[in-house]
Amino acid sequence: SEPRNEKPPFTIKADDEVAKGRFANVAQVGSNHDAFVLDFGFVQGSAGWLLARILLSPSHAKRFHAVLGDTLARHEERFGRIDPGPTL
Image (cartoon, rainbow, N blue to C red):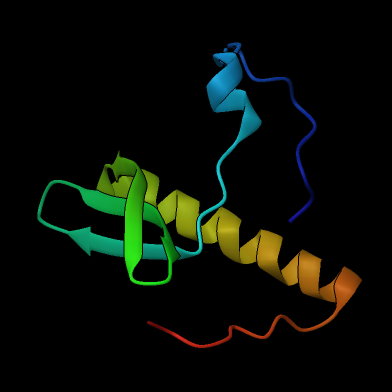
């Protein structure tokens, strides 16, 4: 499908600390009937830190899955295959 260039009907604001972003090298996904839980963390050596926990409704998780898949496919078309690397 064609990308939509429509302007969203809202503005998302972020504090400076949030806007800087955080690097996560580990992620875990869980779910129950009502929500999907995405945990993002950073592991260095034998220590790890939970950086963010995001809860999504099942319908938002489904749309996130679709847009992430599309974005990964475009990235690989542009830059080449992504090696998923080892899992923890």
